[in-house]
Length: 477
Image (cartoon, rainbow, N blue to C red; front, side):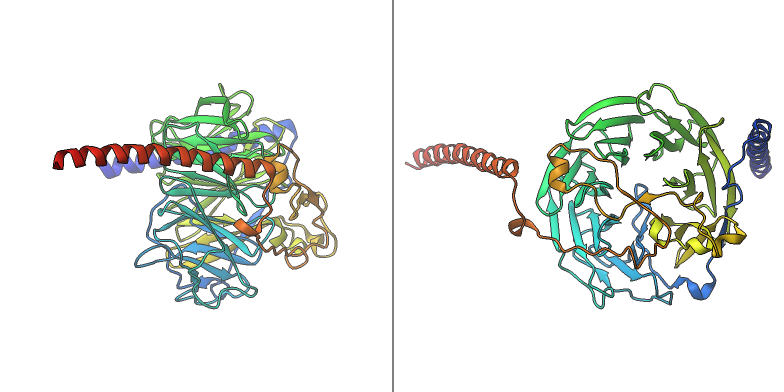
């Protein structure tokens, strides 16, 4: 009876989903509007172009996508007998990996990691050991295990589960911890801001266009928009009602927020929000009734949203546009294997001559599979498709860390995709950590104040100690 009921519910849900899709297509056709990306299709790499015999960490962490990449390398948490191991592998060498060279400096499992957006030789990681580490990748990639990070950032009181670089300001990193805080760092100097707006676990966060506000999701099922400099909540609203992990991203150029989560009946769903008014949703998309937490990726150039659930064998493609409905499903891809993790490569990695709109890496149980999404254009190999490739976010920072923490705002710089390649846009930076870094006046005064406070606390403790020693001496007489 249970199997019959399950089959019935599965068929009912499938028909329900197909009906919604057909209704959307019918509505689009009635309006006379179509998407140039409605025929985008995936091409999955052949076996000899995959990375085989990889060994993902067994640590379960729904706040991470479990794999990250830039145009030159990909990284993934690797199996380790103790501590944390973060493998970093060149993308140009698909092969049987086996025992990958890794960064091994964490004392606990690595939970999340991300490449620097303006320096592809730098990689940040957060761990159960409560630290954040910045690693430098040598030219040509790792040739041995590296146990010494270039910079270690300490300040969180519990494990660090999310790391995310700022997309406008150079060397600015944001991290979220199980201590319920989000910290912003100048990675060359240290902690600069701490946001204490949550009383429960933070599931996700993302910056707006200028990077002076963030949207967050939390275990308390509340969606928040926070001003990062004042650490104040400027808008909030009830998010997804289900108890499982929910996430949100900021569609920066459109200035909209997209969230995914679960209903009370454990149906997966996506909501669209106006960040200025979180009291009501702009749009609701019912997805399905699977249990995997959704991984979300938004392409700012095409306004396409890619959704892939952990444990699923499919990805769903949507487009955010000005017509109704504002978030419309384009297509759904499927494969024979399930995905443990996903990552989207930066725009400089795509092949414009093949009209490739984006590239993904799919983490399977023992391999990493490149997936290319292409828009069918016969003339793409001879002519640059300007309507598919508007100017993309630049690989050069618009602000320095000092500018950003000093109160300046700026939108990301842009660059043309024509005649651009991952090699021509290659960027490498060397860090000047701690004592080698210039210290601004505000930072110097903050350190002076901290030293004075520590001296006062030490004097108070010494006074208590002296009193206790006197009492002990009196008892011994």
